[in-house]
Image (cartoon, rainbow, N blue to C red; front, top):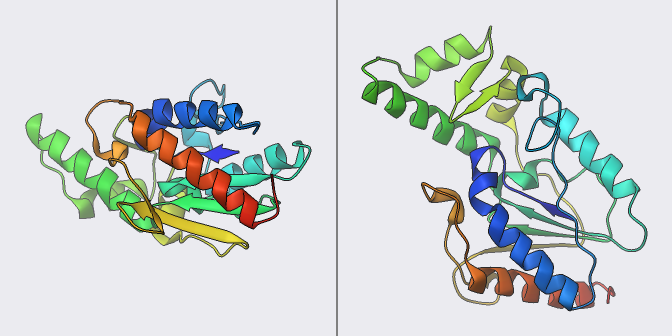
Length: 206
């Protein structure tokens, strides 16, 4: 089960994750990429969800899957994958909630500046304490923003954590989540699938 990056980063990475899923399917794996509440085809407004709701939703999805489950999380997806029961976890470039929130806030400040408005990280934080805040096209509740500010990736076992780059604990690829538009990196998708398949064997999953 893939857990995509959160918010706009998910849109920029989705195509590559789908290609990785197809590669895993060709290798005999069944793969799923669930929509989180408030995202994509979900009928729930995003400003009515928080990290706890996402964590519980993933746990429920995982519980309905038969057979040994590997959870493969990317970036902020690693913040919500720990409540699910799995045989193994695989995480690519995990990031703290505070780091994600800073990126979203800075994008809002830059967009406001281009529109002729003056905002700051401090003023946005103050606004977010009492009302939903629009950040990079995502309307986030005060509870979501507060949770992001303190959220950290939680331990899981067995766990493999990889970065982008080269070496034994890396996969070759580009940081899709930094692109201005959604893209596809076929080589990165293949590397992700290969690494997950190899990791599964070390965990006794085949």
